[in-house]
Length: 125
Image 1 (cartoon, rainbow, N blue to C red):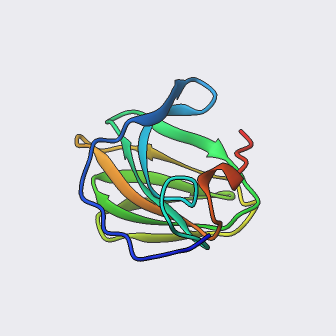
Image 2: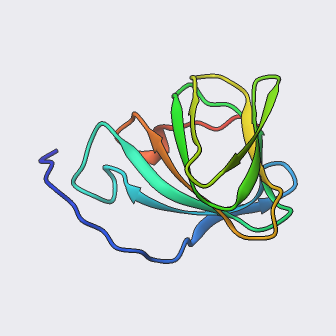
């Protein structure tokens, strides 16, 4: 693939899940080699409304979250952490993790995987 610089601007989160097993969450994939001329990293923005969650899951690829807005309860392994705007979380590959919106406002986070495309991330709930 011929990679090149890409600049994107805010747009609504339109991908997502709404079921008991995976949670009620929306996201927008920003960079993924199947939709942008990029490689080596996949990134996007995730939104979780109050009271909802991205349920506990795992995948072999490490992940980074950076909280943009709101308050959440982040589970990583056996530990729980309250996270808020400007919190950064590193999730090792295969670590159980999930996040629940525990505040009154929208929880927004930026996520990054070290893979070419989002489709390479195999979620196990």
